[in-house]
Every structure is written in C-alpha cells, then in structure tokens.
Amino acid sequence: MKHSIVNITSLAMLLLSISVLSIIFALTFGAADLTPNQLMQCIVKQCDNALTEAIVWQIRIPRILVGFAAGAGLASAGAILQNTTRNPLADPYLFGIVSGAGLGATIASIAFPQNLTFTLPFAAFLGALLAISLVFLLAKFVQRIEQLLLAGVAISFMLGAITQFTLYIGDPLASNRVLFWLMGSLANVEMTQFYLIFSVVICAIVIILAFHRHIDALALGDENAMSLGVNVNKLRLLMLALCAAITAVIVAYCGGIAFVGLMIPHIVRHYIGSSTVKLIIGASFIGGCFLIWVDVIARSAIANLELPLGIITSIIGSVFFLFIMIQGNRSHG
Image (tube, rainbow, N blue to C red; front, top):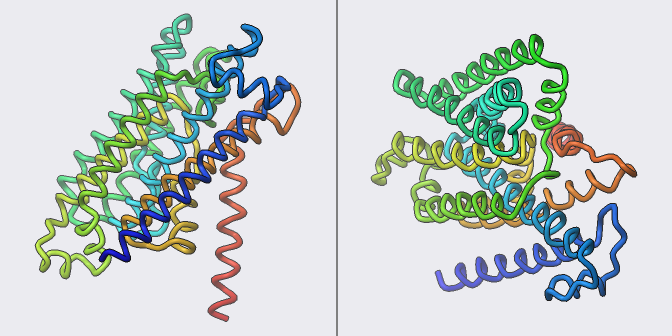
C-alpha cells in the first residue's frame, strides 16, 4: 500500500512538472514576438510597456490556463465515463451536451446579437443542462447503460437537427459566429472563466477520487460490484452527472472540442495504468497539456489566422484511432 502511494505521488509530481513546463513554453508562442526576458518581467509584474502586459496577462495566460483546465476536465470526464460504462468509445459529448449547448448558443446569437459576451455562454450552459435533463429523464425508463448511451445519441441528433434548422433560417452573420464557436476556440476566454472551469473540474475530480474503489469494482462486472456493496445504478448516475457538469461548463465558454475525452484516456491506460486513481491523475495532466499545445498550433500554424480547436483535435483523434485499429488488426493477425 505504501509503495503504491509513493508511485502515485511520484507520477503526480512528474506530470505536474511537465504541465508547468508546458505552460511556461506555451507563453512564448503567439502573434507578437516576445523575448523570454520580457515574459519573465511581465510574470513578476514588471512589464516594460502596457501592450506587453496586456498580451501576457489578458490574452496568453488566460487562454493557456483555460486550455489546461478544459483539457483536464474533458479527459477526466471521458476516462470516468469509459470506466463506469465499460465502453471504450464513451465520450462526454455522447449525451448531447454539445448539441444542447449549440442550440442555446444559436438562439442567443439570433435573439440577442448585441450582447453575446454574457448571453452566449449562459445560453450554451442552459442548452447543455437541457440535454442533460433529457438524458436523466430517459434514465428513469431504461434499465441498461447501453440503452442510456443510445438515448444520449438520439438526443444529440435531435438537438443538432433543431440547431441546424435554426441556423438555416437565421441571420447569416449569426450563423457563422455560432458555427465557429461550435468548432471550439479559446480566443475570447478570461481569467474569471478559468476560475469557474477549474473549480468545477477540481470539485468533480475530488468526488471521483473519493469513489475510486467503487469505480474500480465496476470493472469486475455489475454483479460482482453489487456483491461488494456497490450501488451500481446510483454510482453511474453520479458519475454521469459529474461528467455532464464538467462538459457543460467547458462547452459554454470554449465551444465544442472533440476527441479529447475519447483519445487521452486510451493513451493513459496504455502508458500509466487503468486504475481510477492513476487514470484520473494521468488524464487530467496529459489532457491539460494536450489542449495547451493544440491551442498553440491553432494560433501559430497559419499567420494572421486562428484555426478552431475542434478541427485540430478531430484530425489528431482520427489519425490516432486509425493507428489503434491497424495495430489491433496486426495483433490479432
């Protein structure tokens, strides 16, 4: 037991060090060329001019920290959802959260086009809550977790169809704005949003780790878990609620960022371990670092143009799963 605690502590410290280095190096990338000396001066509150201070403290630091928190949240949500459902393809967005948020954002963009700074994320969050509520309502009528996943997919398609119809008949400018937001971006985030996202993610992770033995028992099967005293249905609903809360608050401010919650847990299981504690710690740090560098690519790959994060993560995720599929066929061949 003591040896296991030491291993987990060492793992956490290693991943924390990598995360800090990623945050520091990511600060050096951007449209404005800033020297390491200028960055260090700004970090210690001794910027040489107001423009440099604004770039560092109002643009780069908020989007890096929000990116880390969002990546950590999505990866952790995906990891715990896959473990509790025993479905390797389970994803935080599977339950229609992105579609619900997109519907809310679309309505806000059309109804309140002059005040989107506050109304768009708020409406997106309400839309995500609508999707979650529909899934929970259906959960009362289904007995198997596989049916709940299918219900989430059905709700996702339904809300997505309503969103597409609304965009089709709506203002073209509002439609373009919502479409870019749905593909994911950290361009307009602020430190207040980091505090909110980080708080939700940390609270959820603490609760998940508190139930780590119960979640590990689910890997043995529902009957074995129940024989060990685990209330399987209540545990799954609690984990679903936590995943939904994490995803909803991230989608509300960052838009749709696909594949992070699907891909990162697989990497962590392969290289670190599949127990809940190792999986959540690994997914949190690696997911955070991953999204930091995806954002660096998004704002640095093409001059004077910022790419949506969802496009980059979808490309990386697609290649990753093609590689996994090929490797799986070779191992069975």
